Length: 623
Image (cartoon, one colour):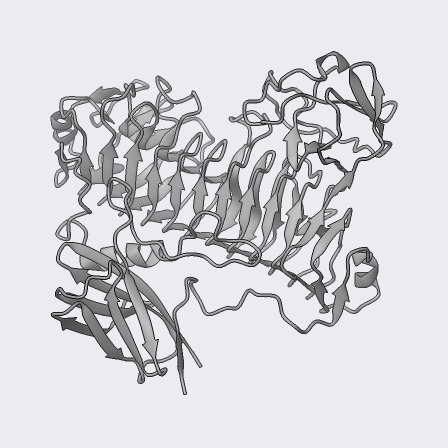
């Protein structure tokens, strides 16, 4: 008999620790010694507790599963401090010699991979001992004073009494790394590793070799110096992970075909002061083909929310929520074909490159790329900074002209009453503009745009044949006169009503709600957790109501309004994963009972309307 289970993930896959494992690893065990002593394809259960200073090279087919609160910690616990005048010193002889990264002038030590932690948080490293105890110059590091590392003599200096706080220094550059294929890492926490910039604490490569088919799910990776996860090779999956407070970059996938990054939460990545224009923020993807980025929640990163850079082809960005990131919310740069849809992108672009910065610090930017479609996204421009959707051409090599870009059916709102004197929506070129402005190369149409001041020149475009670099901002009327937004609208309706049904087809409303129902809510991913249900936001950011789904005796599903209203007409449509309608029904009392007995196992989305409300729930059917 079938069981019907309401879950909040895209597929009925248990990501909990298993009770059976080939080898159990207790705190204090040498994990690498265990791996060396067992054959390839072994499953290791890592027991609850802090597994300190472990570095593991897996064999082909190995699986590492953590019990809840199983932690790999790459830092040494520092004790036995001695006072020297107004400083305290600890002798520490282990150092990492490699230095890498482009730092801001205010924090020239960002390239050194060793980090000191006070109660688990980064302490900024000073360039000289005279700055010990002074407040940090890095605005993202909140510990009260700086530290100094005398590497020649192996001494760590701090400017406060260490008692009452936990002090650690990162020592191991890798938690799990190697070039073996088919490795699974599940339900583990990885903290405080001394990964170098552009390298990961978890990494699928070694000595020039690269692995395929790694699965990393339900993990937390945080407070490492460089990148948290760096995967090279094909067919990797990172799913439902919690990735935060990385020094340089949360995740990077490079030279990869067929990889998937889904249902992850990323925030406050990029807290070390690497140069924003070099590489810093939540993600960076390089030279991938067929990459899928879907249903991720990327917010408050010091850099970009999702960034594909350098020859990524056939990319799908679908159903991501990208809000309050310091630079772009989403950027596709120096790339090829991409489909960007059903994303919610709000209030990005505060970095300072924003106002009066041409077309950067956009919520969504396509740069030096071709064959890109941007559609059915919701974008909100902050009242004081950032751009809307921008398309640019720059000198990035002969293969990277901006060609065949289509922007359509997006919903854009500019917040009122602020200081944002740009907020651009449109396109521009600072290199070889004539082919960029060729007829039919760029098209904006069917977009739904809202601003309090309709006389503002938010739009940027130029006539066919322009040969001068840089275009100018134009009015809505001039934008349309240039052949753009022939079917678009521009109004001052900031009421927050949802995208009207006659603007996006019901199929696209269903598709976007389906994606949003799989985006994790804040803090609801990582070891021992599951994602929460989220539905597509309206313009002002308030959640739309949702369905409550109740199962009875494994044979029927009852669908009621989440708001708890006992009465009211409700119409429900159920669709399978391909969008095919499999059930439809209507009730006058706000409650429906639907039999699912003849449906195949799988994932279904229930879409309902009750008056002006749109609601969504997910149903996973298993045996």
